[in-house]
Amino acid sequence: MDKDKWNQILLLGAATLGFIGLLHYRKSQNARKAIRRTTSQVRQIEKLEKILNEQKAIEHDIQRGVRAPKMLPPPEGKVFLNPLLGTGVKQDINSGRAFLPESVFNKVGGYLVADNVFSIDPASAGGSILLVKGSPRMEIVMNPKNVKAAIVTCGGLCPGLNVVIREIVMSLHFNYDTTEIYGIWNGYSGFYTEGFIKKLTPHDVVDIHTLGGTILKTSRGGWNLEKIADCIEERGFNQIYVIGGDGTHRGINALVEEMERRNLPVFIAGIPKTIDNDIPIIDKSFGFDTSVEEAQRAIDSANIEANSAEYGVGLVKLMGRNSGFIAMQASIANRNVNVCLIPESEYELSGPNGVYNYILERLKVKKHAVVVVAEGAAVSCKDEKLVMPGTDASGNPILYDIGKHLRDGIVKYCKEHGMNITLKYIDPTYMIRTVPANSGDKVLCATLAQAAVHGTFAGFTGFSVGCVAGTPCFIPIDLMISTREGKNSLPGQRRVDLEGNYMWWRLMASTGQPSFINEVKELN
Ligand SMILES: Nc1ncnc2c1ncn2[C@@H]1O[C@H](COP(=O)(O)OP(=O)(O)OP(=O)(O)O)[C@@H](O)[C@H]1O
Ligand SMILES: O=P(O)(O)OC[C@H]1O[C@](O)(CO)[C@@H](O)[C@@H]1O
Image (cartoon, rainbow, N blue to C red; front, top):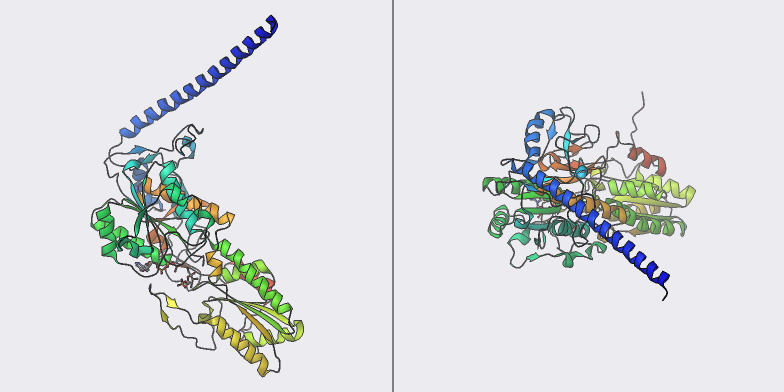
């Protein structure tokens, strides 16, 4: 090799070494900066006694209308720095820690104003409500190494349950460095059933987000406060994540009070779950959108059946025990639905303006009809008494089967009026809640799960997580289970608002359906 070539190689080598050295220097400078900053924050935080800055602020801001969940002082008598705090650059590819810049953490005193977002019972409405935001906190109440967490799913299935479970495990493990994570099998009763508490690792949950159902299994009934609280105390769980609907949340509330009575520092978070979308305050419950999407397949089939027969009727029954959100939303989305019946909107079956006659008249002209009914719509039938046959293990009413009632009633009415129709009845009830979550719901599930973990570490208990006006918030469970949304709703319930919410009017506009009430009031 000639001299020039050697010189070139030497120069290139020197340049490369210089570049590596520069990178190394910058990295170590950054690390030093981060350590300097972290150390000063530790010192600052060590100055605190036994209460977080946020807790102090909230105690003061409650007079301003802040509806904050209960807060517990740090069980170990000191405050810790959130392991997520970093420089905004991920330093270590093997962990999910130390990459959030300070700006991402919740500012003390930063609340979400929720007065125009949801309507609360006018009797208890006292001006605007401020909700605590669900982002991570720089100060946390526990050393993550001393956390022993339990996750449980209760009530009916809902798309996205496995995504929430996965994300709680991943967030605890990777973001907070907590490894003592347990799954409680089969709902609340798993707390006191031999062999139903099993350790969960990231490996156990890594692929479950692609599956419907819940790997932890779920159940109704089985609520036993004493036994559940004994298990928590004996096993030393100090963070509990409960995924469930309104019944489940009432359970959380009772459990929080029991922990208080026993003087146990246990942080309990709820993640609201219901495909019915009937939980108040939050924008939307996870799994709802997926169910509405899945319902399209049933309605499309009903439409094809109806259009492929002379005088064809396609009838679909969808879930919605007390609230008709799924039926309403799925009908609006589909655009081919001619009649939609929900629990909130009264109707009569017989008479000239009744449902049966409307379908008959429509068949005479259009030759086909598509009908969607919410499973709870028997309660809004005004001219027939359709009695519920009993209650389930959790005390929820077992619904009168309005789908079969309509199926038989429509065929009979048309026959009596000289028309032989072909009616196809589709009941996709369980199919729409057992599918895996769609992408939008997966994002929502992950957001809620992470928020729940941030909330327990921030020292809150007895709270539920939900997006309100798009912002994740920590909602006190007593507020959630006492708030009514929509006319004739019970505490803790959201129902379709026929008058105030334009969705029902959109439904009427897209189906073209009348009121189905025979005696129509004259307009003034
Ligand atoms: N008022 C209550 N207090 C304590 N626990 C309750 C209460 N109501 C229900 N539970 C318990 O919560 C669990 C779930 O309740 P439920 O079956 O009513 O489902 P849910 O949470 O309302 O969800 P879904 O929307 O699927 O109905 C059950 O174990 C039930 O026993
Ligand atoms: O048949 P199960 O499991 O009791 O669940 C049915 C109920 O669950 C819900 O999906 C609520 O989660 C309701 O829509 C429905 O009435």
